[in-house]
Image 1 (tube, rainbow, N blue to C red):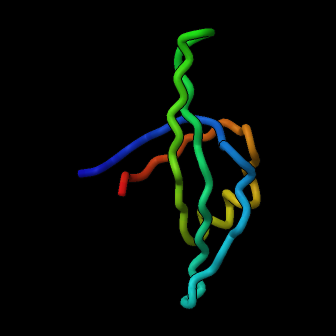
Image 2 (tube, rainbow, N blue to C red):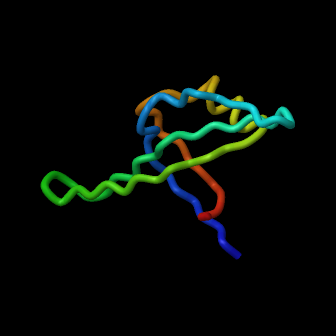
Length: 75
């Protein structure tokens, strides 16, 4: 089973909420996971895609720099 949990900061303002021909909401945004201190900091970036009601909620309630937890799977 491919199951992932990532906690990080929203990389840029989630925008561009789109809808498929079937009316399904789709939102893409980036998530930055930074670990380490001072000169030893390392940041991993993730491209996140959310669908349906979750996409609408993220677009409405989350903004750049906000710390969030994403639970999903890699694809």
